Amino acid sequence: MAAGTHTGTHTGKHVKPVRCGTLYSPPCGKPHITNRAPSAKCVNSGTRYTLPLLRFTSNAGIRRIQIRMGRKILRTIRFKGRGPVRWIVKGFKIPTLALGSGGHALTIRVTDVKGRSVSKTLHFAVCVSTPVFTG
Image (cartoon, rainbow, N blue to C red):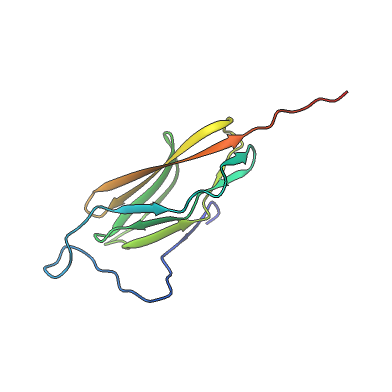
């Protein structure tokens, strides 16, 4: 996918996920979002801000992941059926050319198959250097 790479969870050991909702499984919990710390405090205008690695988990199954900036939807990932219980988004890049200098917020939202949603806000800044005219 051109705007970002989306892959399932890959770990060193093979663990079968446990779904909720049966007599022998744990109760359904709200979905979770965890992320790595951002790599850059400030990105230059005209470059791309790379979203830190995001992990999504839901023992009910993930229905939708959405990344927004204000009201603008940057990416929606939808799943059919029961959906995965774990998913990773890495390498998603956000163009900064149209953004003004200063702070910006991204809202990451995951919704599970039971309709429950959890959101997380990530902040980044666009730095613009002042041009220097020499004569």
